[in-house]
Length: 258
Ligand SMILES: [Zn+2]
Image (tube, rainbow, N blue to C red; front, side, top):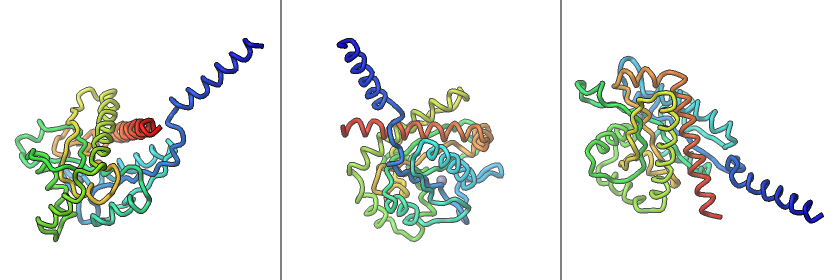
């Protein structure tokens, strides 16, 4: 009898453990908002006849499906080729009380002679930076959303959110997502370059008052990367990597709160 009891106790411990280390429990309590950058009259970067606005919409659709299959509640800021203002993009994240806000973009450089040498995946979180390269990328991404806003107002907007707890959480989220994206991509494409996690003054990340990141999935100016980015397979790897990263971030957060 005692042996029976200890077997039952052992089994219930196993069940409990399985509950702890399982796939994160009930994902449906989490809302994710995905923002496909640009849209409509704003094509974003373009090169070789390919446009950033189209690529990020394709990836967003894959990401939507992937998050759904994990059980999350998912919303997208745009599901078609439409332009949204800055406030409209982040308002949905606040309105839906999202746990995480992810903005998808693709990169480009201006110097033609370096097109084939600059490549890779980068994840940004909101932070001022002295790094000129990050500033340049942010300026390009900010151009359309900041139309009509003067420099002083821009500084006020960004200062209002810096140093808050959101920045620390966004940084953690960025690390988990970047690591998992690279791990996933490198499984099939060994030469994908890890551009790392970086701070940047991206205004799309200012408005949503929750952990928010901006992913530059690759360089449209690099022919190898551009070709891969528009394949379904590559997009799947990116989407799966992002979802694994978010799973990991939320699981760690849950553990910290227990
Ligand atoms: Zn962009």
